[in-house]
Structure formats: structure tokens, C-alpha cells
Image 1 (spheres, rainbow, N blue to C red):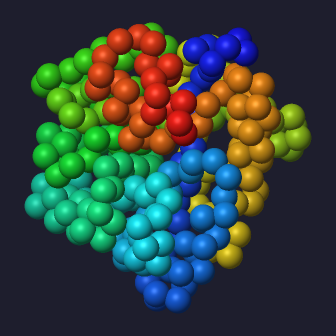
Image 2: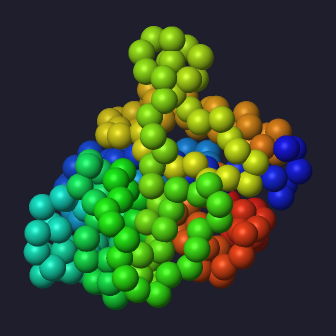
Amino acid sequence: MGRGDDAAALVLCAELPRVAARTAGVALSRKLAEIAGPVTWAADVDTLAGVADAARGAAPDLAIAIAPDWLDSRATLRRMVAAARQAAPGLDTAVLRGGRPLAHHALLAEEGIRAVVVEAVGDAVRGSRRPAPGGWRCRNPVWGLWELQVDPPRRQGLVGWLTGGDLPRPRAGGLHVLHAGDVAVDRPVSGRLGRWLAWAARRAAGGRLRLARPGDVATLLARGGQAVVTGSVLKAA
């Protein structure tokens, strides 16, 4: 379990509050830069622009937060994703929260999105697909796009908070995706996300866990093969 090739891969996500003013974007960008370990921050277009501009080329891992009603219109979805990628050049990840399954997979792939973190998945979509490693909660609905499904919730309440029961037990060679929900602009790493990062750091120190970004996972999955977590991208994360 301690060997690097047995380490589980962990993706951590959270959603940033709306930040439109540049001064607020600068302050938030500085706070995110201080965080140890990769976290994927989902946000609206204005917030993405503020954080990416303030970071000046050293932006944290950003994702466009897809509003469920965007899925009602292909034109709206395309316009919003294009605006997000213009605001944060290089952005290739999206996050869709809630029980609505993702739609318009081919459109997202055409617009440069390679990974979407989702809470629910719909029926299988026809297209060019690669199989995911056994036990991984992800799928390749169309060529060039991977859906990574958030792990189901575990123990809740005070007992779960004290014992870490809301966190998965890392599976050797497995993939876990967690979403911490909304964070505060003045304290982005606090509460649930702070506990998760501390938990991940302890297990990473023992070689049992490796933090990764959704784009890292999509890159390695696109290469095929079952030993995906041994790839250099995750080792560098």
C-alpha cells in the first residue's frame, strides 16, 4: 500500500464565491496561492477572470461552474464555456453540481473541456469511448471528454466530523473525487476543505494517496491502460 504505484488518486474540488472587483480578485488569488496541494476551484466567469488576471500566469487550477439551466440551451452553454476559456486561458475543466446529469458532451469537448466533475450521470452516450480502470467512478461519454463522478457521501453528523467518517478509505490504485461545496472569500480553506486537505496530506506522506487535478486524470485516462495512476502527471501533482 505504501508503494507509489499503489497510491490512490484524489481530486479535491470547491466552489469560489462570486468576485467581480479586481481588488477582491487579487486578495482571493493570493489566498489560493498559499494553499498546499492542488485544489480545483470552480467559479462563474467573472470570478474566473478576476482570479486569473490577478494571478498573472500563475493561476490556481480553475474550472467553470456550469449552471444547470445552461444545459437547456446549446447556444448558452457554448457561449458561457467560450467566455470562461477566454477569461482563464488554458481552462479545460468544468464542474456541475446537483442531481442533473451533464448534457451536450460533444459540444463541451469541441470547446476544449476535457474533464467535468459531476454529482450525477445520465444514460450512456454514443461515441468514441475508452474504458475506465476497474472501480473508478468515471466515464468517457464522447471522445476527448471524461466525466469524473463525486464519491457518494459517507457518515454525517458530529460522529462523522470527529472521526473523518465523511472521507473515503483510499483504495490502492483507485480514484476518489470529493467536492467541498462553497467556500468563504476570506477563508477559502476552512471547515470541510481544511479537514480534507489535512487528511490528504497525512496519507500522501505515507505514500497511500496522491493529489491530482481533473485535467491530470483526463490526460492519463486518454492514454489508456489500467496503470493510470502511475503516470508522470500524477507523480508531479
